[in-house]
Length: 208
Image (cartoon, rainbow, N blue to C red; front, side):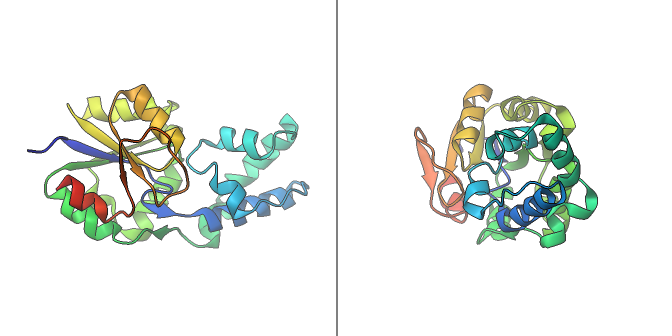
């Protein structure tokens, strides 16, 4: 008997990894606005999955509001977004596993990213056909927990599960009151995850 009636996925660190391209994009923007901070992949990976304002506050706590505004404008400029440095890399087995899961579940995507970033994911790998619905922070202005709940209500889900890779994702599921599966192969650590997977392919083993 299936325990869940829908699987809601996080994006960064769960379905794909864009941290190298995103780091290069951020460093381009930092140089453009005259800030000397050079971010490393390791530094930025800690905050992948947060909304832009939260990332700015974490990686540049001493920047002025004027500097943050200029940096925000440059980061989101079309000519400097991450795909100018190449698109993200899917984790091993993502499409095969989505195809298998789709046989028994409705599949959804909820991320704190912008809509163009989400569309870049769909367009670069041709995976939109597997998702029944999706939502992002830029489009709704809501927290990730609220967007998880929004997807559940919009699609009449009674028992969805969320798959993510960070403590931020776990906290969002607590807010949304849905169970959580920890993608251990991603960017973060989660203290209270009851279910975890070491690879994306393993999801098909435990959910089908």
